[in-house]
Image (tube, rainbow, N blue to C red; front, side, top):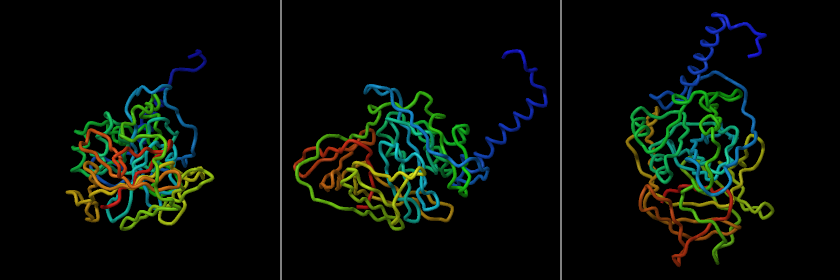
Length: 332
C-alpha cells in the first residue's frame, strides 16, 4: 500500500464478500456433489486458447498428472486445450455416446474444456498414475464416495470453484471450463509422471499401409486419416473434422484401437440409461496406428496399478511415435 487510498469501508467489504459467494454458487449449482447434471447458467467470457505451461526440465516427475473429463457431444465441440494433452482416451458412455479423458504431464494449456462428469471406469483407468488430479464437473450420488476413496485428488467445482468458470456462447452443461493453473500451480509434472506403460521409439517392421481407420460406438464414431504432410493422424468425430477452438486440427502421432470388454455397471443417468463400464485391466487385441501403417498388437494390463503393454505377434514391444497418443476403447 502506498498510503494514497483510504481503508475499505464496511460496505465495500460486504459487497466483495457477496460477490465471491455468488461466484462460487454459480459454479456449484451446475455440478454439485450430489448429481450428474452440469447445469448452472452464469455466463462469463468465452474461453480463448492461450499459452501452455511447460513441464520442468529433466525427466524427474515433480507431481501428479492432471486428468480432465471432457465433453464430446456435438454441442461441446470444438473443445479447448485438447491438443496439449499427452494422452487422450475415448470411452463409451450412456446412450452409446462418447466422452474423453485428457491426460496432461508435459505441458498445461491455459484453458481446458468443456468439463463434464466422471464415471466408474475412470477410477480403474487412473490407477496407473500416482495420485493423479482428476478434474470433473460432478458425478452420480452413489459414485461420489468411491471417487473420494480412490487414490487420486478429486477436483470438481465443489472442491475448487476458483479454477472453473462458465463460458458464454454455449448452453449449460456444455460451457464449464477449467484453468489448469488453478489446480496445478507448480506447472506440469514432467514426462516421468506419465506412467501409462507406453514405449516410444522406432516403428516395428511390417505393418499394413493404412489411409484411414474408423471406430464406431453405438451413437458416435471416430475416424483417423493419415496425413503424410503432417506425419500425423487427422481426427474426425461423427463425420466432422475435429479442431480446437483456435482452429487447429486434432492430429495425434499414434492412435491405439484397444479392444476391451464393455459391460453394464450399477449406475444410470437421469434418463435411466445404464452407464457402461469399460474394463481396462486384463488383456486383448489392439491395433496401433503410426507412420501411416497399422500394426497388430496384444494389450496387457495385469493389475490396475500398472500401465498397459502393447506387444506384436512375435512378442516384442510395439513402440509409439513421439507425440500425442489417442486410445479409443472399442468393444471387443
